[in-house]
Length: 169
Image (cartoon, rainbow, N blue to C red; front, side, top):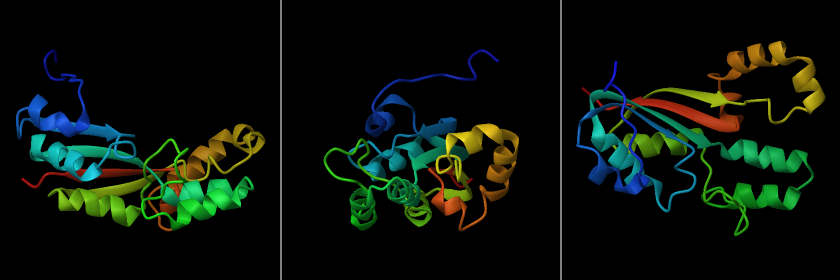
């Protein structure tokens, strides 16, 4: 097993210079596309290092969840800004540059030549529930999350969207 996994540290948009093209079986890109200057070159570089048939696990912040969460907490002005902003940012003080909807995230991967095979929501309801409910009914919440994770429209309002894609063989 030694040598099967190799960690490489570097900037996402410099991936092509760090890893041989078409040499990787799996790339994890979690909580990256929300913070980079431009996600398109990052996804293109990610696709370029994958072997034919290789997989990408991409996790991005969900836009709808951010709007709902802000609105439910009484921050209607911030919710309105997130909803109206072309990339789903709440402005200069926002910690994320962008948030994604299912269609936008899938289109980004498809444009880079990847085939999106699955999309799941992560934390569909968990972030919206009071802690007493989530803690008091943890097993029921986990089961409900599993049930809703792949089913629109619930998947689409998750705090995070998980896309599993492959480079065509």
